Image 1 (cartoon, rainbow, N blue to C red):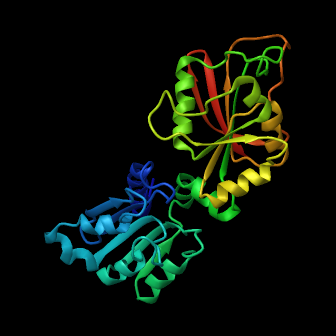
Image 2 (image 1 turned 180 degrees about the vertical axis):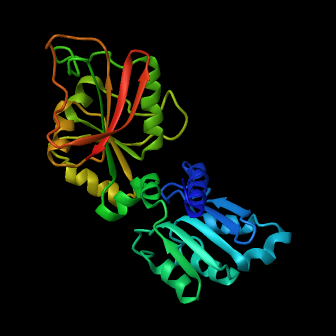
Image 3 (image 1 turned 135 degrees about the horizontal axis):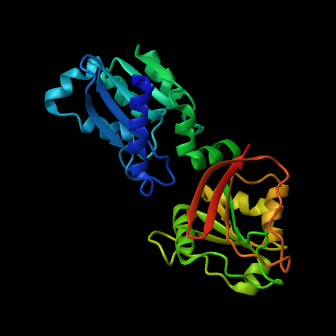
Length: 310
């Protein structure tokens, strides 16, 4: 059974997801304000749009006039550490201190260099009790692209391919229709959710893929083609410099295997069909390290599995 702190942090995460599209490249953040005496939620907010008010600001703004006097006996729950610096908006840590709440509960520390514990310290120095690490793994997972970008100075890398039941990705070196109409739509949804996409030179020359969002709504990812003149390191550096926090790799076997061999991946998305081609094609990439399945969905006869490093 979840504790009160965990239940309220779970609500913060529900709110945070509402900002998935608008907050990029900022993280998704949710905030909840709870009256400690009654246990009633008196304010909620999330980060709606990059450059606009943060979750904590929106949560305080939602508090009804009749509840404002309760703030000094309230707890603020926020899924990511309140900022402590002036960016496009003032520091949320200062706002929390001015409101004089009695307690703050933080899901996880912000990895951004200008924050990294400074917001928590500022609130504590004002005499406000701070609890950290509540549902931390879930809070980090929600913003895994943001954390990977700031902690590893590269985008979150998703390797994606479709294969036959016997583990092949093409037929005698030629494209093979493996995905279904529905799973092709899901590919375009994935593209709309990520910042950049990459294929190898051979795929580019043979198939001339558009790599855009045609069967879903949203913006198309930034397009990269890996070649002898453009290495994986150069692409990742450019993604970091341009604040592209995620990269989908849709290339052929050689390109995908290069990322695997270098240990440069955070998520595998593998679609498997029921058809067999009896060894007449290119083998799917091979993984040497252990992986953990975290999602499995069936769409008609095809199964889409998602893995992360074990």
